[in-house]
Image (cartoon, rainbow, N blue to C red; front, side, top):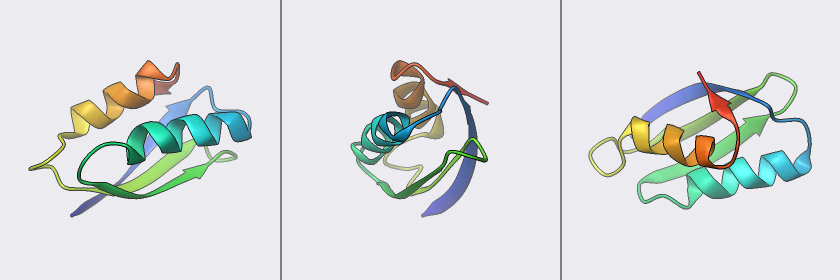
Length: 68
């Protein structure tokens, strides 16, 4: 499992936390999703052989947020 912290712009409330957490944790091979609203980051563990990072970013972007 790889661990990564993504910069995610546009998160401002608990609804954002739930949306991002749900999108990322719903993917196979993704676990330990943690959102830091104040820091604008999302930390998670993932298995790149199961779910590529690009797919994780796309799922978060589909919720309306910008992933850097």
